[in-house]
Length: 337
Image (cartoon, rainbow, N blue to C red; front, side, top):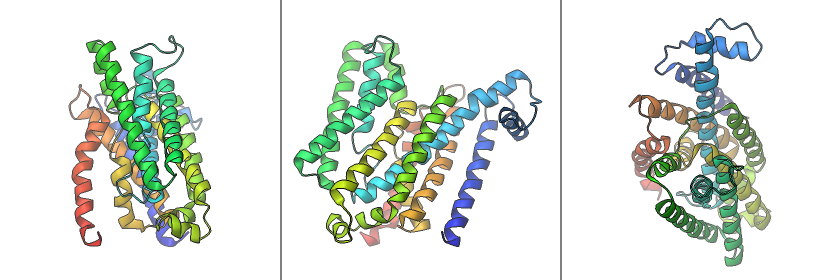
């Protein structure tokens, strides 16, 4: 690893830790950075907590898991976006291009509105299963159509439209006003109710998928030049692409099942990070993960505090920020188009 990469990674880690510590202090309850570190140290067995039980619970059971889940989701979505853009040679590819988000939405609505599972299946589990079904459909369609990168994208668009229509149909015909509002809020992305189980699940999946993608870093570099060029460099395109597609789809499904659909993170952040690291994936992926984590930590903090006590869905804020940011990225790259 080069000195430049070490510097960027180290700076990103420092920024992430500082962002998490600062974000946990922001909210209606007056919490200091010292309170955050004291609570964390006590729960990690590094000392005795000096906080009152209520303040300790606010830090450890409410704000900390939510902030960490935001960091994990931001990192995961950004990594998936970077991989998808290279794998499919499409600068507009994002983690939801495989129809995972729309499938998760249908699964969640089926559980909440239709009562599928008879109460034994949670919203997150329903969303995860829906995402997997949608991804399986995309793989099947793309295989039938030839398996090339453009066929994968087109299959993803078809699945996205199908499951979006199913979701809309179920909500409009079966849900009452209160249920519709709750489902809509989740569909737009929400970290409300985050718990340590979700953090552990998403962080574990992120670690595994990031390790897999880093192991294929040179292969992803080759994919950026096209399937034929990659094959000429010894890449088994028909074997490697399904592996990486499955890895990113599983990570996206896990993140969406816990936080809903949070758009533009996986679309914009990889482009912005490439300006700092270049296109080599051994450098790009870890820095993109850290950038996405810091970004979503602050976006979630803004979403839960700017209109306090009302909360804005995280996906709405990422879109409001992401659209002008993406236009700026496109404007800067207009000469290379």
